Length: 177
Image 1 (cartoon, one colour):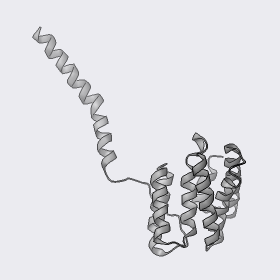
Image 2 (tube, helix red, strand yellow; image 1 turned 90 degrees about the vertical axis):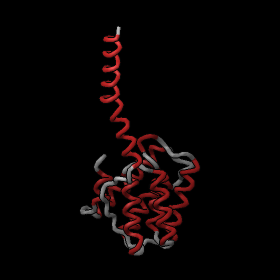
Image 3 (cartoon, one colour; image 1 turned 45 degrees about the vertical axis):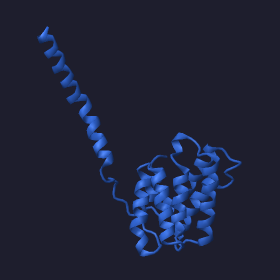
Image 4 (cartoon, one colour; image 1 turned 30 degrees about the horizontal axis):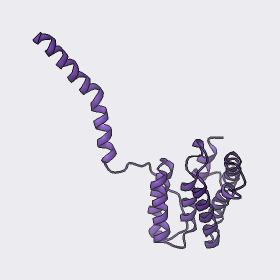
């Protein structure tokens, strides 16, 4: 009888070591400092905002939509004239286009962010083109379906890529086509 209990105990310990330890490790990693890829997305905003902007883009590329929205909002607080900060807000509100349309509130807020970016006016043509691509997505958001908006954005980003073929950000947005 004691031998069976010992075998059961060994089996339980083995299970814990091999199957539960990775979960504990994942939880430890989740609480460790963020580990984002390295991104440099040059913008004409203030120099002090560039690192903030790059971090926000890295979050966006890591599908950290709520965090990227907060990070881009902080960019606009640091440099209120940074039109690309509002582009980032609109990108974050769009969410993952593969999982369906954002809700009505997010679409409305995304359109407002695009409008704010346009009013501020981007400093470079490249930035204006990125903002125009987001405008293509959000324009008439209340009248067009999700698929139509996504295709309009993809078409606009293809134009950005053709205009700036060395732009890694534009390149990456056309890889899925």
